[in-house]
Length: 378
Image 1 (cartoon, one colour):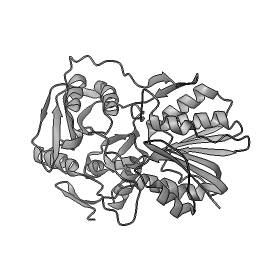
Image 2: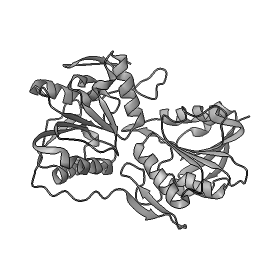
Image 3: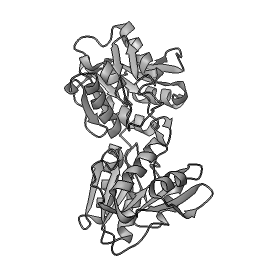
């Protein structure tokens, strides 16, 4: 795989995270190339312009535009780490790009805003509402994406929260949407986080915009909650890829002596998990909350139980690389006799992966869509 991005701004070597041997996917797409080509032809950004980049997958836009000292906002820890590594890998100063997460406040006004269309429309809505006070009538707002991830709802959202839109022609299956800020626009209050009562309990669950299944319990998690282990002896339980933390919350209820560790690469997910756990237990239970690259910060043989509902997509790309990384990390972090309990769609071949890693894998429960699997360290 050729990992060199060649655009008018320069030639840059870019890599994805998590790293894997024989990587078949690039760290950028045709939409990144399209918007960078457009900026070069239009002579943008102008000298001294304040530039904001939203949802830059692995830093392609930030790296290419680093001389303009952009601010890059993302909900993805892996995206931020990739941006740092790609800056260093191209001998560029890390401080050229200001990295902020999706829940940090923006500061000042921006002259140019570049948005990579996210997979979640709710995340874009949240971002545009947060962005509104930082736009001027002359701010140029450009949304870039592959045609397949630019449904009409994105046009409507931009028009409702920014102003009138125009579009480019499609190029290599990518397109640009230009939005003109309307200073007379009345932007509604931010509806996120969304709150609901967890079915069958008294727990109140709050979800930020980029959390999966924001307004109700999804069917996979519902099955998983019915098959969580209960013990008086478990010491350290990890909710890996925790999302809103519902799995770890119920695991805490069923394992009263355990310390619960919530881990996700989404800043909004971990913030939601913390909010939900602390609302449920206050300061009466011990827990940690980590925005991280899986279990990289955990010591070997430090956990008794890992509960995992791994994602099978990364941004707009479907694949098993995240799940594979989670399983490998879990094998190292579990103590002898420790258990990794996983739920996944039936069509995903997790059983084979877990058997190769652990030497054993048991089916605990299943329905027409999901399977719950268990592997133990020996």
